[in-house]
Length: 118
Image (cartoon, rainbow, N blue to C red; front, side, top):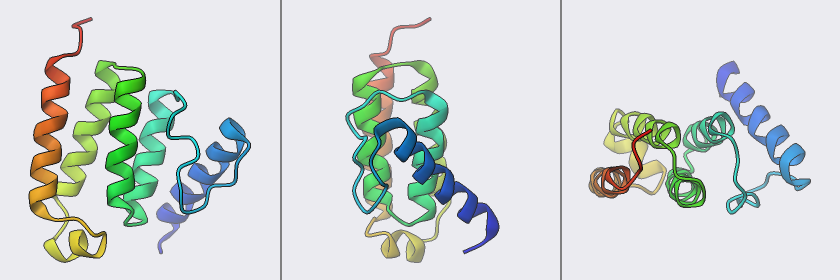
């Protein structure tokens, strides 16, 4: 694990502790709490860095449903771009497939069309 991944992982753990009082382990204790877009960005990217791809996707959808915003939508698009850039081998390691990336992105874009324009 490189230094950037360690920093991201550490940041996600600290955010989890500060925001929820819970230790960040294998589950997202803060999935149903509304967080800032910046927090969501860090958490999603930390999960992707840890190859917890399904958790990252579930977390993004939970946050967008909790507090719909164009900023959260853009963060999700960025995350899907990152997933799409991964090799099939990397996706498989994270128990994900290229088809799941495509379906998830399509669902994400559908939700984005329902967002109010600001």
